[in-house]
Length: 300
Ligand SMILES: CCCCC/C=C\C/C=C\C=C\CC(=O)SCCNC(=O)CCNC(=O)[C@H](O)C(C)(C)COP(=O)(O)OP(=O)(O)OC[C@H]1O[C@@H](n2cnc3c(N)ncnc32)[C@H](O)[C@@H]1OP(=O)(O)O
Image 1 (cartoon, rainbow, N blue to C red):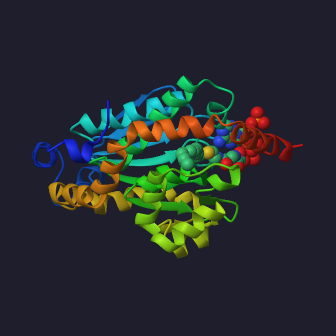
Image 2: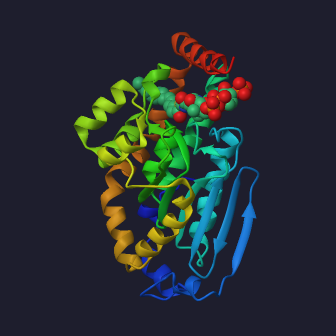
């Protein structure tokens, strides 16, 4: 089920008309105290949907580090699709339930010592996450409350706006080369749209993880706030985004992202084959193993 919401759903006006929210200020219900909250969760994703504001808070909940396992990736896509279909939801704040870690990126154990079939299924799920989140009609805000390497950074980059906790210990970036692996073209395209070509090239070659002031300076994140203000800032920012007429905002988002999305959709199977061939190589398996061993040794 390819999730290509921005391209395949001509539903912007319908969603706008059927919305339960005040068209001028979609968050007005929330400020007037008529809160109707729905909670639902899969195993690894917690969701709280405030029907008054139309905003869902979606928390990654896969301790200890929110690594993106096949199970989490699958639940993630199901959750976004469910919210996308829910007329009372128009925006999502993506954050972490784990203290200090937004997401450690892809679960490296899913890419080590497994069969080609497993690698293919895993990579398809990674693609699906990107297609679903990057292609979402909803307003998406990343409330980055911790460190966010690799696919953790990718998830944040898929969102419309990034707010990060200003903590000197937190870092964010696409560090794939540090693991001896290569960020695929659609990771690269996503970053290029945010940072531009030169900075993306440098960032990807070095596998650079940025401190929070560095990330703000280069535009990888849009706003830094004290740790305890991340959620409230995200709530305020999403209200501003939701105040824009939805059909116009959605069509604009689609226009900006369509080319990148189509590129993956048109090369999806080849991209899976590339990944399976690449990740199955002995030299790459060895690099990943060395990286995992180093992670574990850091603690001793
Ligand atoms: C030319 C063709 C190209 C085609 C494409 C080919 C390839 C593309 C391939 C892949 C793209 C991948 C993108 C990714 O996302 S790769 C993942 C990158 N992630 C990282 O580098 C993060 C690694 N983790 C850390 O740096 C730290 O753990 C972190 C800072 C997040 C947290 O530190 P902390 O000290 O709090 O916690 P730890 O003790 O280090 O970790 C706890 C526990 O969790 C394990 N772990 C950490 N990260 C991962 C992970 N990503 N996957 C699996 N497991 C992870 C860690 O080993 C500890 O385990 P244990 O010792 O308690 O058992």
